[in-house]
Image 1 (spheres, helix red, strand yellow):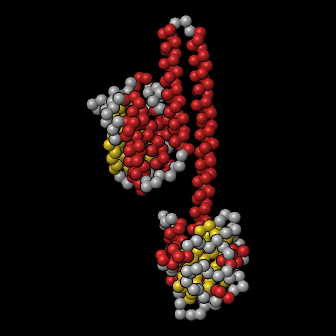
Image 2: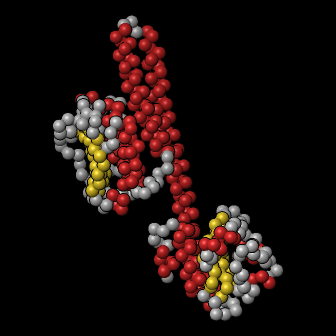
Image 3: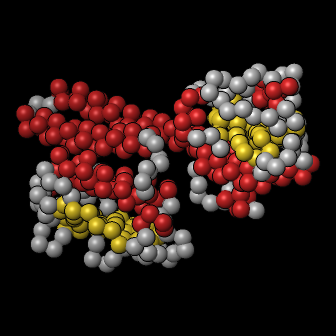
Length: 377
């Protein structure tokens, strides 16, 4: 029961499988235990975990088995196998140098149901206090092998879902790049060609300045799309991700952002929201570095019923009448609206700019924008 309940816990698969082998050794009084996980083609062992060997024995043995001998027999004929003397079996391949002697053997296939795909095998050797393993030992081992099969199947299903999610994101981002970025660049090229026919130099300068703003906005969109193509997982959690991002951007900002957190940041923010939060932090700080002429940057993330991110600088501020043209604020607003939230940009007290990006967290009641603020444009 302990091994089965651990499947629902947030434990890495190798640690969970090792725990299952340890439980199996304890339940059937086996001196040694091992668990082999087959590759996707079910042709050889992809992983091989052992219990009972000392570190010195592990080093002397060296390489792990790939599925020959009796281990290979269980791969090709996945059914329980009990032996009184492992070495006397016709398929026995022998042991490598330095391997401890083993006599009695019990092997059972790892699968979820009788007719389901086989994921590997559970091996137990050297029955303590008896010459060979019993029917009861075999039944117990099969129960634990079932738990191992469920854990392996869950892990592989989650991996497939992540791959499909990445492929879907790549397809969506590709369409966005074509629909917005490529078309904008094409229009920009046409507009610059038209400057050759303008009679006055001031008009040419105005057209070129507008083109520069458009290029800046387009670069922001490309950078955002490339960021989304990266790995969505956040090593160490959201808190560590924000701190790492602040350290990364410090050289371009000229100062390290002051970062603070309120609430259960790593435990309450779903992965999808965390990905957007990191992108908003990057976008907001990058805007400050390019346009604000700021010397101080403050990043605050508060987590409760909603996630509220504030990015404040002491720069020259922003002219809200221009709607933030070229600052990439449209991306921030779209990210918030996608999650049912809001994005606001304000003149900060004492000068500078304050960007407030908030989204609800389940369960939540989204709050509307404050009356003294202007939505990001």
